[in-house]
Image (cartoon, rainbow, N blue to C red; front, side, top):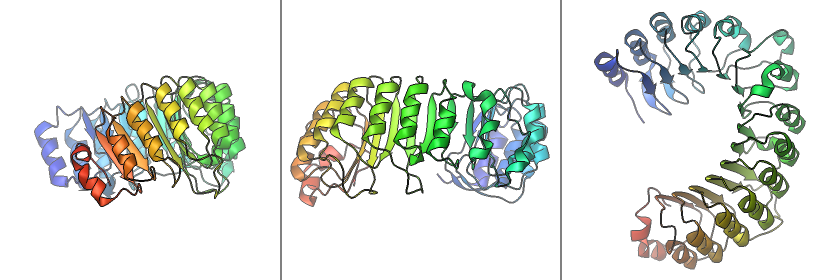
Length: 390
Protein backbone atom coordinates (compact mmCIF):
# COMPACT_ATOMS: atom_id res chain seq x y z
CA UNK A 1 0.00 0.00 0.00
CA UNK A 2 1.20 3.50 -0.84
CA UNK A 3 0.88 6.02 2.00
CA UNK A 4 2.00 9.62 1.68
CA UNK A 5 3.37 11.99 4.31
CA UNK A 6 0.32 14.19 3.75
CA UNK A 7 -1.94 11.24 4.61
CA UNK A 8 -0.08 10.59 7.84
CA UNK A 9 -0.09 14.29 8.78
CA UNK A 10 -3.83 14.52 8.10
CA UNK A 11 -4.43 11.51 10.33
CA UNK A 12 -2.23 12.95 13.09
CA UNK A 13 -3.96 16.34 13.02
CA UNK A 14 -7.48 14.92 12.85
CA UNK A 15 -7.16 12.06 15.31
CA UNK A 16 -3.81 12.56 17.02
CA UNK A 17 -5.05 12.64 20.59
CA UNK A 18 -7.31 9.62 19.99
CA UNK A 19 -4.97 7.43 17.93
CA UNK A 20 -3.87 4.34 19.83
CA UNK A 21 -2.63 1.96 17.12
CA UNK A 22 -0.89 2.77 13.82
CA UNK A 23 0.17 -0.14 11.61
CA UNK A 24 1.92 0.53 8.31
CA UNK A 25 2.80 -3.01 7.24
CA UNK A 26 4.77 -3.34 3.99
CA UNK A 27 3.83 0.20 3.00
CA UNK A 28 5.77 2.72 0.92
CA UNK A 29 5.56 6.29 -0.34
CA UNK A 30 6.20 8.10 2.93
CA UNK A 31 9.21 9.42 4.82
CA UNK A 32 10.34 10.17 8.34
CA UNK A 33 8.67 13.60 7.94
CA UNK A 34 5.32 11.85 8.22
CA UNK A 35 6.46 9.88 11.24
CA UNK A 36 7.62 13.14 12.82
CA UNK A 37 4.00 14.32 12.93
CA UNK A 38 2.97 11.10 14.64
CA UNK A 39 5.65 11.64 17.28
CA UNK A 40 4.55 15.23 17.88
CA UNK A 41 0.78 14.83 17.94
CA UNK A 42 -0.06 11.26 18.99
CA UNK A 43 0.97 11.20 22.64
CA UNK A 44 -1.52 8.44 23.45
CA UNK A 45 -0.15 6.02 20.86
CA UNK A 46 0.22 2.48 22.18
CA UNK A 47 1.40 0.67 19.04
CA UNK A 48 3.58 1.92 16.17
CA UNK A 49 4.19 -0.82 13.60
CA UNK A 50 6.35 -0.12 10.53
CA UNK A 51 7.87 -3.55 9.83
CA UNK A 52 9.23 -4.08 6.31
CA UNK A 53 7.89 -0.74 5.06
CA UNK A 54 9.95 1.23 2.54
CA UNK A 55 10.49 4.53 4.32
CA UNK A 56 12.54 7.45 3.00
CA UNK A 57 14.82 8.32 5.90
CA UNK A 58 15.71 11.99 6.20
CA UNK A 59 16.76 12.04 9.84
CA UNK A 60 16.00 10.55 13.25
CA UNK A 61 13.87 13.41 14.60
CA UNK A 62 10.72 11.27 14.43
CA UNK A 63 11.99 8.99 17.20
CA UNK A 64 13.15 11.98 19.24
CA UNK A 65 9.63 13.47 19.19
CA UNK A 66 8.13 10.11 20.07
CA UNK A 67 10.51 9.83 23.01
CA UNK A 68 9.67 13.33 24.27
CA UNK A 69 5.89 13.08 23.99
CA UNK A 70 4.92 9.49 24.73
CA UNK A 71 4.84 7.70 28.07
CA UNK A 72 2.33 4.92 27.29
CA UNK A 73 3.91 3.14 24.31
CA UNK A 74 3.50 -0.64 24.44
CA UNK A 75 4.92 -1.78 21.10
CA UNK A 76 7.47 -0.14 18.79
CA UNK A 77 8.35 -1.95 15.57
CA UNK A 78 10.55 -0.71 12.74
CA UNK A 79 12.13 -4.12 12.12
CA UNK A 80 13.43 -4.86 8.62
CA UNK A 81 13.41 -1.19 7.62
CA UNK A 82 16.28 1.11 6.65
CA UNK A 83 15.74 3.47 9.59
CA UNK A 84 19.22 3.81 11.08
CA UNK A 85 19.70 7.53 11.74
CA UNK A 86 17.96 7.51 15.10
CA UNK A 87 19.77 8.30 18.34
CA UNK A 88 20.23 5.51 20.86
CA UNK A 89 19.65 8.16 23.53
CA UNK A 90 16.13 8.62 22.17
CA UNK A 91 15.53 4.90 22.29
CA UNK A 92 16.84 4.93 25.85
CA UNK A 93 14.46 7.78 26.72
CA UNK A 94 11.53 5.77 25.35
CA UNK A 95 12.64 2.89 27.54
CA UNK A 96 12.80 5.19 30.57
CA UNK A 97 9.49 7.00 29.98
CA UNK A 98 7.60 3.83 29.01
CA UNK A 99 9.37 1.42 31.35
CA UNK A 100 6.13 -0.02 32.75
CA UNK A 101 4.12 -0.19 29.51
CA UNK A 102 6.69 -1.15 26.86
CA UNK A 103 6.48 -4.90 26.18
CA UNK A 104 7.65 -5.25 22.56
CA UNK A 105 10.47 -3.57 20.61
CA UNK A 106 11.71 -4.63 17.18
CA UNK A 107 14.23 -2.36 15.49
CA UNK A 108 16.47 -2.11 12.46
CA UNK A 109 20.03 -3.38 12.29
CA UNK A 110 22.50 -1.95 14.79
CA UNK A 111 25.14 -3.35 17.11
CA UNK A 112 23.49 -4.64 20.26
CA UNK A 113 26.15 -3.12 22.49
CA UNK A 114 24.53 0.26 21.73
CA UNK A 115 21.38 -0.89 23.54
CA UNK A 116 22.82 -1.68 26.98
CA UNK A 117 21.35 1.44 28.61
CA UNK A 118 18.01 0.91 26.88
CA UNK A 119 17.79 -2.66 28.18
CA UNK A 120 18.52 -1.44 31.71
CA UNK A 121 15.28 0.58 31.72
CA UNK A 122 12.72 -1.75 30.08
CA UNK A 123 11.69 -3.85 33.06
CA UNK A 124 8.50 -5.12 31.36
CA UNK A 125 9.96 -5.96 27.95
CA UNK A 126 8.81 -9.37 26.72
CA UNK A 127 9.74 -9.24 23.02
CA UNK A 128 12.85 -7.96 21.28
CA UNK A 129 13.92 -8.33 17.68
CA UNK A 130 16.54 -6.71 15.51
CA UNK A 131 19.90 -5.25 16.26
CA UNK A 132 22.79 -7.50 15.31
CA UNK A 133 25.85 -9.28 16.60
CA UNK A 134 29.14 -8.45 14.89
CA UNK A 135 32.02 -10.82 14.25
CA UNK A 136 33.92 -9.31 17.20
CA UNK A 137 32.60 -11.75 19.77
CA UNK A 138 34.69 -10.33 22.63
CA UNK A 139 32.51 -7.18 22.52
CA UNK A 140 29.63 -9.13 24.07
CA UNK A 141 31.39 -10.32 27.19
CA UNK A 142 29.05 -9.41 30.01
CA UNK A 143 26.23 -8.35 27.67
CA UNK A 144 22.78 -9.23 29.00
CA UNK A 145 19.29 -9.24 27.58
CA UNK A 146 16.47 -8.35 30.01
CA UNK A 147 15.47 -11.46 31.95
CA UNK A 148 11.81 -10.64 31.25
CA UNK A 149 12.17 -11.53 27.55
CA UNK A 150 9.98 -14.31 26.18
CA UNK A 151 10.21 -13.66 22.44
CA UNK A 152 13.48 -12.96 20.59
CA UNK A 153 14.74 -12.57 17.03
CA UNK A 154 18.47 -13.23 17.07
CA UNK A 155 20.04 -11.58 14.03
CA UNK A 156 23.56 -12.70 13.11
CA UNK A 157 23.98 -14.59 16.35
CA UNK A 158 26.62 -17.30 16.10
CA UNK A 159 27.53 -20.20 18.34
CA UNK A 160 29.80 -17.91 20.37
CA UNK A 161 26.92 -15.69 21.54
CA UNK A 162 24.46 -18.46 22.46
CA UNK A 163 25.39 -18.25 26.20
CA UNK A 164 23.82 -14.77 26.28
CA UNK A 165 20.40 -16.35 25.75
CA UNK A 166 20.77 -19.28 28.15
CA UNK A 167 19.79 -17.43 31.38
CA UNK A 168 16.22 -17.03 30.10
CA UNK A 169 16.05 -19.79 27.45
CA UNK A 170 13.70 -21.90 29.55
CA UNK A 171 11.14 -19.06 29.44
CA UNK A 172 11.32 -18.38 25.70
CA UNK A 173 8.00 -18.92 23.90
CA UNK A 174 8.88 -17.42 20.50
CA UNK A 175 12.20 -17.74 18.68
CA UNK A 176 13.13 -16.24 15.32
CA UNK A 177 16.35 -17.72 13.92
CA UNK A 178 15.85 -16.74 10.28
CA UNK A 179 18.90 -14.48 10.37
CA UNK A 180 20.96 -16.34 12.94
CA UNK A 181 24.25 -17.88 11.81
CA UNK A 182 23.36 -21.31 13.17
CA UNK A 183 24.23 -24.73 11.86
CA UNK A 184 22.35 -27.88 12.83
CA UNK A 185 24.16 -28.45 16.11
CA UNK A 186 23.63 -24.85 17.19
CA UNK A 187 19.90 -25.32 16.63
CA UNK A 188 19.95 -28.53 18.65
CA UNK A 189 21.91 -26.98 21.51
CA UNK A 190 19.53 -24.05 21.88
CA UNK A 191 16.07 -25.56 21.27
CA UNK A 192 16.56 -28.36 23.79
CA UNK A 193 16.91 -25.60 26.40
CA UNK A 194 13.59 -24.01 25.38
CA UNK A 195 10.91 -26.37 26.79
CA UNK A 196 8.22 -23.66 26.64
CA UNK A 197 8.80 -22.80 22.99
CA UNK A 198 5.55 -22.25 21.09
CA UNK A 199 6.67 -20.46 17.90
CA UNK A 200 9.81 -21.10 15.84
CA UNK A 201 10.88 -19.42 12.60
CA UNK A 202 14.10 -20.77 11.10
CA UNK A 203 15.81 -22.07 7.98
CA UNK A 204 16.44 -25.56 6.69
CA UNK A 205 19.90 -25.55 8.28
CA UNK A 206 18.05 -27.06 11.24
CA UNK A 207 17.90 -30.29 9.19
CA UNK A 208 16.17 -33.50 10.26
CA UNK A 209 18.41 -33.81 13.30
CA UNK A 210 17.22 -30.46 14.63
CA UNK A 211 13.58 -31.39 14.11
CA UNK A 212 14.12 -34.63 16.00
CA UNK A 213 15.53 -32.68 18.96
CA UNK A 214 12.68 -30.20 18.70
CA UNK A 215 10.13 -33.02 18.84
CA UNK A 216 11.74 -34.37 22.01
CA UNK A 217 12.09 -31.14 24.00
CA UNK A 218 9.49 -28.66 22.70
CA UNK A 219 6.14 -30.30 23.35
CA UNK A 220 4.28 -26.96 23.48
CA UNK A 221 5.22 -25.97 19.93
CA UNK A 222 2.21 -24.48 18.10
CA UNK A 223 3.76 -22.89 15.03
CA UNK A 224 6.87 -23.61 12.99
CA UNK A 225 8.02 -22.12 9.72
CA UNK A 226 11.12 -23.49 8.02
CA UNK A 227 12.38 -21.36 5.14
CA UNK A 228 14.92 -22.25 2.49
CA UNK A 229 18.38 -21.11 3.53
CA UNK A 230 21.36 -20.00 1.48
CA UNK A 231 23.36 -22.94 2.79
CA UNK A 232 23.30 -25.84 0.34
CA UNK A 233 23.79 -28.16 3.30
CA UNK A 234 20.27 -27.39 4.53
CA UNK A 235 18.20 -30.56 4.27
CA UNK A 236 14.76 -31.30 5.70
CA UNK A 237 13.02 -34.49 4.60
CA UNK A 238 10.29 -36.95 5.50
CA UNK A 239 12.41 -38.08 8.46
CA UNK A 240 12.23 -34.70 10.16
CA UNK A 241 8.57 -34.22 9.26
CA UNK A 242 7.60 -37.56 10.79
CA UNK A 243 9.52 -36.78 14.00
CA UNK A 244 7.89 -33.37 14.23
CA UNK A 245 4.37 -34.71 13.70
CA UNK A 246 4.81 -37.47 16.27
CA UNK A 247 6.42 -35.30 18.94
CA UNK A 248 4.76 -31.87 18.67
CA UNK A 249 1.07 -32.68 18.90
CA UNK A 250 0.01 -29.09 19.66
CA UNK A 251 1.06 -27.84 16.22
CA UNK A 252 -1.48 -25.53 14.59
CA UNK A 253 0.67 -24.03 11.83
CA UNK A 254 3.34 -25.91 9.86
CA UNK A 255 5.21 -24.37 6.93
CA UNK A 256 8.17 -26.37 5.66
CA UNK A 257 10.57 -26.32 2.72
CA UNK A 258 11.47 -29.94 2.00
CA UNK A 259 14.30 -31.53 0.08
CA UNK A 260 12.69 -34.98 0.07
CA UNK A 261 9.24 -36.33 0.95
CA UNK A 262 7.13 -39.50 1.10
CA UNK A 263 3.44 -40.33 1.43
CA UNK A 264 4.18 -41.82 4.84
CA UNK A 265 5.31 -38.44 6.18
CA UNK A 266 2.08 -36.74 5.08
CA UNK A 267 0.06 -39.61 6.52
CA UNK A 268 1.87 -39.06 9.83
CA UNK A 269 0.85 -35.40 9.80
CA UNK A 270 -2.76 -36.41 9.22
CA UNK A 271 -2.64 -39.02 11.97
CA UNK A 272 -1.10 -36.92 14.73
CA UNK A 273 -1.65 -33.20 14.14
CA UNK A 274 -5.37 -32.87 14.82
CA UNK A 275 -5.11 -29.17 15.73
CA UNK A 276 -3.45 -28.15 12.45
CA UNK A 277 -5.24 -25.30 10.65
CA UNK A 278 -2.41 -24.01 8.40
CA UNK A 279 -0.16 -26.34 6.38
CA UNK A 280 2.23 -25.44 3.60
CA UNK A 281 4.92 -27.59 2.04
CA UNK A 282 7.30 -26.60 -0.72
CA UNK A 283 9.36 -29.29 -2.41
CA UNK A 284 12.72 -27.77 -3.26
CA UNK A 285 14.85 -28.54 -6.30
CA UNK A 286 18.01 -29.40 -4.36
CA UNK A 287 17.75 -33.11 -5.16
CA UNK A 288 17.14 -34.55 -8.61
CA UNK A 289 15.51 -37.70 -7.24
CA UNK A 290 12.64 -37.70 -4.75
CA UNK A 291 12.05 -40.85 -2.72
CA UNK A 292 8.35 -41.15 -3.53
CA UNK A 293 6.08 -39.40 -6.01
CA UNK A 294 3.21 -38.85 -6.60
CA UNK A 295 1.88 -37.84 -3.18
CA UNK A 296 -1.80 -38.48 -3.85
CA UNK A 297 -2.36 -40.88 -0.96
CA UNK A 298 -0.36 -38.79 1.48
CA UNK A 299 -2.33 -35.65 0.65
CA UNK A 300 -5.59 -37.55 1.04
CA UNK A 301 -4.51 -38.89 4.45
CA UNK A 302 -3.39 -35.45 5.60
CA UNK A 303 -6.67 -33.80 4.61
CA UNK A 304 -8.73 -36.65 6.06
CA UNK A 305 -6.97 -36.38 9.40
CA UNK A 306 -6.52 -32.61 9.70
CA UNK A 307 -10.18 -31.64 9.57
CA UNK A 308 -9.55 -28.17 11.08
CA UNK A 309 -7.34 -27.15 8.15
CA UNK A 310 -8.21 -23.66 6.84
CA UNK A 311 -5.09 -22.86 4.82
CA UNK A 312 -3.35 -25.32 2.49
CA UNK A 313 -0.25 -24.88 0.35
CA UNK A 314 1.11 -27.71 -1.80
CA UNK A 315 3.98 -26.57 -4.02
CA UNK A 316 5.65 -29.57 -5.63
CA UNK A 317 7.22 -30.41 -8.98
CA UNK A 318 5.83 -32.08 -12.07
CA UNK A 319 4.61 -35.54 -11.15
CA UNK A 320 4.18 -34.64 -7.48
CA UNK A 321 0.39 -34.78 -7.54
CA UNK A 322 -1.77 -36.38 -10.22
CA UNK A 323 -5.30 -35.51 -11.31
CA UNK A 324 -6.46 -38.09 -8.78
CA UNK A 325 -4.63 -36.16 -6.07
CA UNK A 326 -6.37 -32.94 -7.10
CA UNK A 327 -9.63 -34.82 -6.85
CA UNK A 328 -8.73 -35.82 -3.29
CA UNK A 329 -8.13 -32.15 -2.46
CA UNK A 330 -11.54 -31.26 -3.84
CA UNK A 331 -13.13 -34.08 -1.87
CA UNK A 332 -11.40 -33.73 1.49
CA UNK A 333 -10.48 -30.02 1.79
CA UNK A 334 -13.93 -29.27 3.12
CA UNK A 335 -12.98 -26.41 5.44
CA UNK A 336 -10.06 -24.92 3.51
CA UNK A 337 -10.53 -21.23 2.73
CA UNK A 338 -7.13 -20.37 1.22
CA UNK A 339 -5.22 -22.67 -1.11
CA UNK A 340 -1.92 -22.50 -3.00
CA UNK A 341 -1.21 -25.16 -5.61
CA UNK A 342 2.11 -25.27 -7.45
CA UNK A 343 3.01 -27.73 -10.23
CA UNK A 344 0.16 -30.07 -9.36
CA UNK A 345 -2.09 -32.11 -11.63
CA UNK A 346 -1.51 -33.69 -15.01
CA UNK A 347 -4.29 -32.41 -17.24
CA UNK A 348 -7.52 -30.45 -17.39
CA UNK A 349 -9.22 -33.40 -15.73
CA UNK A 350 -7.50 -32.44 -12.48
CA UNK A 351 -9.08 -29.00 -12.55
CA UNK A 352 -12.45 -30.61 -13.21
CA UNK A 353 -12.09 -32.86 -10.16
CA UNK A 354 -10.87 -30.01 -7.97
CA UNK A 355 -13.81 -27.82 -8.95
CA UNK A 356 -16.30 -30.42 -7.70
CA UNK A 357 -15.31 -29.80 -4.08
CA UNK A 358 -13.73 -27.22 -1.76
CA UNK A 359 -17.10 -25.74 -0.72
CA UNK A 360 -15.61 -23.08 1.59
CA UNK A 361 -12.72 -21.95 -0.61
CA UNK A 362 -12.36 -18.16 -0.82
CA UNK A 363 -8.94 -17.65 -2.36
CA UNK A 364 -7.01 -19.86 -4.78
CA UNK A 365 -3.52 -19.41 -6.22
CA UNK A 366 -2.23 -21.77 -8.90
CA UNK A 367 1.29 -21.65 -10.28
CA UNK A 368 2.74 -23.84 -12.99
CA UNK A 369 -0.20 -26.22 -13.03
CA UNK A 370 -0.40 -26.27 -16.83
CA UNK A 371 -4.14 -26.30 -17.37
CA UNK A 372 -5.23 -25.36 -20.88
CA UNK A 373 -6.77 -22.00 -21.76
CA UNK A 374 -9.94 -23.84 -22.76
CA UNK A 375 -10.27 -25.41 -19.31
CA UNK A 376 -9.58 -22.11 -17.58
CA UNK A 377 -12.23 -20.38 -19.68
CA UNK A 378 -14.70 -23.21 -19.11
CA UNK A 379 -14.25 -23.01 -15.36
CA UNK A 380 -13.94 -19.23 -15.25
CA UNK A 381 -17.16 -18.99 -13.26
CA UNK A 382 -15.71 -21.27 -10.58
CA UNK A 383 -12.26 -19.72 -10.62
CA UNK A 384 -13.68 -16.21 -10.65
CA UNK A 385 -15.02 -16.69 -7.13
CA UNK A 386 -11.49 -16.52 -5.77
CA UNK A 387 -9.10 -13.66 -5.22
CA UNK A 388 -6.04 -14.73 -7.23
CA UNK A 389 -5.33 -17.45 -9.75
CA UNK A 390 -2.77 -17.95 -12.47
